[in-house]
Image 1: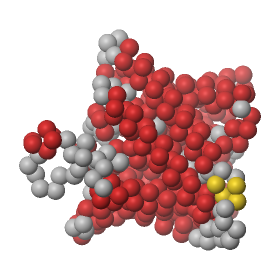
Image 2: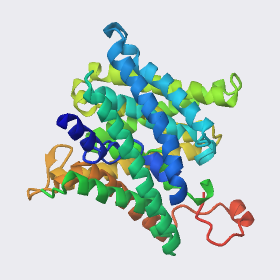
Image 3: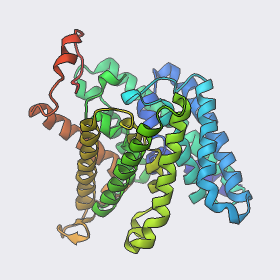
Length: 184
Length: 200
């Protein structure tokens, strides 16, 4: 039991999927709304992520090995389902850069997490806690970055300090802190 | 939303995942950049020829499928021809096929924008990878250049975020100083709001 709790704790903080595997970093930078709204928006992004991750886990570890080459295709189709759910909840509906659909942001995030799960899991009970912890870690970071963005927008007059680069710097320091900040 | 993005951000943000994950070393950056540009070119060609075959939403799903399939194909085929590449290819290589940067210019008629964005992306990848490898391991392309104790944090995820952010800030500052991305005159004539960002 202690080991499972440790796995859950590690996947929320020390092995946070955004800060150590970059999964969802773009989504967090682009899609974080005001702090107050980030609690529900984060939930609307995290819940489909959890669903798709568990589905992906089932396909990864339960289909016959002869179909392993089709797994990327299965992850892609899974991700389309996840995008559909996210769009139904009201997110990722707007156009982005050069009229690219906002759902492209969701696609990379969902596919990436399923590939990550394939690399990290091994058909064990602990995988349930690893996936749950990873999704919770994403949700927490989504809220934290929404708070940072709102403070920057409110308090900073200089454009450069209100830009996405400052969010990346904040993520760099957060990643350094959770990794133990080794210089050499 | 797009009006607030500088030309540099229109490359950095869509290509963020590859900029973070594919810049552990210079050779890895070159491999990832070349693959992304190849897939972007292929997707663009297919987008142009298949534009009228599908509805908008179905068309995008089709293009995503094409891009992801190409990335999978390269992931399987390249190590067979170039075994030395297999050490640089991880699961992030597959994500090139679903990286937004592959699709941002697939439907634009302006070829110059497509070329410019991909050249800028290649520059960013090399710049970021060089910084990370030099500071994090003291090498470039495996050749030792700095013999002092390296900053191993630069080869870790924190270093990736840091280097991409610093690269973006430096290049934005240089671009502004040398006025590299000149504003479009016709676009400027319609912009009257204070605080509008620079645009193409």
